[in-house]
Amino acid sequence: MYIIEAGARTQHYWKSLWARRSLLYYLTRKDLIVRYKQTFVGVSWVLIRPFLTMVVFTVIFGAIANLDSNGLPYGFVVFAGVLPWYLFANLFSETSGSLITNGAMLRKVYCPRLIFPAAILLVGLVDFAVSFFLLVVMMFWYHIIPSWQIIFFPFFILMAGSTAIGLGLIAATLNVKYRDFQQLVPFLLQMGMYISPVGYLNQLVAKRWEFIYSLNPLAGIINGFRWCLTPDSIPLYAPGLWYSIGFSIAALLIGITVFRLAEDGFADTI
Image (tube, one colour):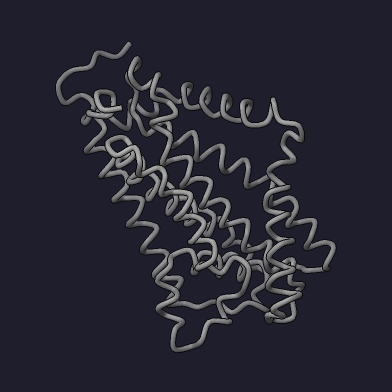
């Protein structure tokens, strides 16, 4: 039993968050069940979306535009870019709307509000794991054997997740006060897909624009994701990587700070 006193939410916030891990499990389980139980294709939908995106991008950039893939199958190059992008896009989109979606619970029950984005993160990682299975199948099919650099793979997943959650927390805070902000999210993600190296390699960008292009943090994350799978074919752009690392850490810290500062007023505003 928790008694809410003045300042208690700040003093014992993280302890309170951990104490409510059963609620986190419930929210995660509920989201997974709702997402797949009443769908025609069930969990296969997680595979269909990135697969169809891969097909479209492969036809446009590989077959029609005939862009270079550094000797790798173009479909594999695209899918290795689609996976981290969808991880980021799904987490960012759902985190930004997490407070509105859980508005009824938020008004009735006190719990650390970060528990809602945390549940979204867990669901997103489950979705990613299912999608990654198709990438493994493609690597077997094309006889692509990863090198020791594969150990950095979880690091780039962490970067994509922290960037998405950090920006999503800021968007969720704005969305509570300005509901029309949520309408911008699909547009931003649609634009972001094309200015990020999802359907093509970073290396196709002219050298003089390479650093400016890398100011998009997803460029370094996607490049690193491909690099740790095929380091002999995909060179790593170090300045972009370091920028993406710094951005992901800053985004998460700023996002949590902004979210926490506004958290006490969510129930009254939403």
